[in-house]
Length: 222
Image (cartoon, rainbow, N blue to C red; front, top):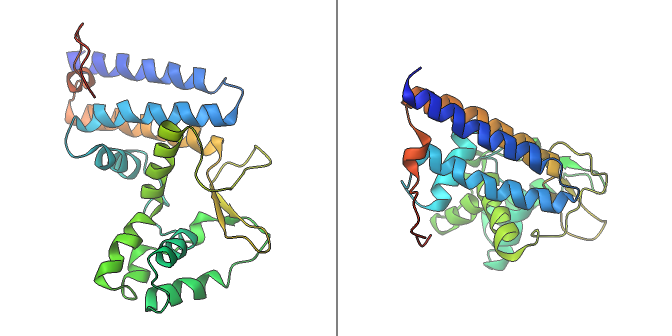
């Protein structure tokens, strides 16, 4: 066995063991925090220090975990962003609101009904492109991750009351905004997909994942 293959197997076995331990944590919120932290070393193993931390996380979710909804645009989050930017009178806000008016209130709405970026880009001015990007689910997931790790809370007010939902969805009260919910089971599934994609990537590129990290007694600033 080539040396890099042994190192890949050793590296992945460690993180699969960690995933098994995380799955035993009682509180769903605490499991999410741990999964959010555990994505980081997977992205580092795949891409080293190339690009920003956000760039590596986004690539991991898009390229290795292959989340099918990663590049879809969240209409509720886009509408909120445009409101904050006072873009009420522009075409993108009007189109976003028109589409949201067709959603069924009081019913969970899956992310699969969210539009792709090309469906909305023609309605946007150049200055609104950043709002479209930030409303893509892969970037919202990174924001969610940052809230978990840096503020020890989840953004928004969405809740998976059943505790059994497997996929992200939207919920809403009659008068409140649509709230994006990312269930704990979704985090577990996405993490397993990331591990599978990482294994294929490391083997294909013949990468020793341990070469992507610095070890030793010196505590290095991160």
